[in-house]
Length: 230
Length: 382
Image: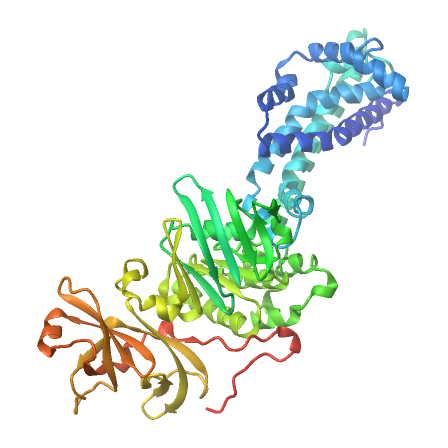
């Protein structure tokens, strides 16, 4: 196995960290939104649906810019986070994770929503008659039955987060060791004269990483399906 | 005691019922498909909310719109066996069986899992997943799962309807054992009269979202005015009988009932077992005097007690033998030829082979809780 240069391993570790936190923090929110969209009827449902899917169709730069407007030092949410928790998001790796999470959110929600829609609600009704309250039914019946969708959603979002570029560079900039993830490092190398060989190495690394994520998702989903379908 | 006073508007029709019935043994909700039986049971279970009304089961108010009471399904403690078993696919049979049980406070667990597993013959399949079970096994697991939740009442919505005849025959005896060996009352929904006659004691007749009649199976199936609902083909009488003896040489079992003795093809039950059987009106003939040389084994003295409407070529007559009622379907021409009138003494002729074997159900014995350890087996004196 070829060894990585310090620069490469720094970018790789940063990318993994950003992608991990991007998925971990957006998972509960994604689950809630998927549940709302699949199971609930409420005023403004189509607005929520549109909002969730917006990052799929907007130029990533626009998403990054909007995040900057919202979470910048002068933005309404940014000011709130700073005064309440002392948190600044722009130009930090946490900001990169937020940008990646927003961009990956539609993929995650879509996978979870589709799997939730296939859960047989008659099984949930049966569980209620057996003495389980709504929360217990969700944990013991609904979640296990939609587990393949959750895994697929999480890993798709993970892969998407690894590759996020436009929104991240706009919102979190290109700071070595802080927000210079794999794609941004790659972009930087391409812009640097003589960096072609190093750029190719990073490109191969990205491809391997994404393939691994997709393969894991496929294998896990298949295993979970086998557990459910016996 | 089950009390339902319910109004509920549905897409196709309105449910509007008001009835009270005993909940000993099995109560059958009988009616055609789409009559509203399943909606009634879903409202009982709390899966469907009535527009207004009141539901009380054995003194516990489950729903009362006037008082604002609407217990959620998980607090009603009613076991529900669905038409499709609805087993949880991600759990083993054991996991399914314990799903309700582990939610019952330990002080309130009256039912011993091992007994239920033995009663339903599930020892061999405990580690399997629902996908690896046959249709009959699935339904048996569903029965066990509902039972282990220690319900106040078991609801069964056409639990046999999705099974073929051999599977039905496999599961039916288990339902009979539940009825005979546990003290838990059962509400059994079906549109199949043979199942109901075999299993139930009380019948609630449902039609177009209304309850047309409530009463014992014997009474309702013999009422002429309910024939359009109970079905003309099904016309007949249900009688309670007891095994009086076996004639091994000829493979005949002799039963005694309120009207006398009845010989039927061999029934593999011990002497003194109580059972219930259905005698269809079209299998019963009448004679003015006892025939002397005939192949018909059953000739029972009786008196004509009711004559049905004389329309068409056939007429149904109710005859009383002892304290039992039987129905006979004869031609209008025979009625005229024999000059039958109310009070005419007749001999009732029933072919032994005509007794509907499928309808032979064991009568409800005294409720026995599984906890006392021994499963109720009738004395085997045969």
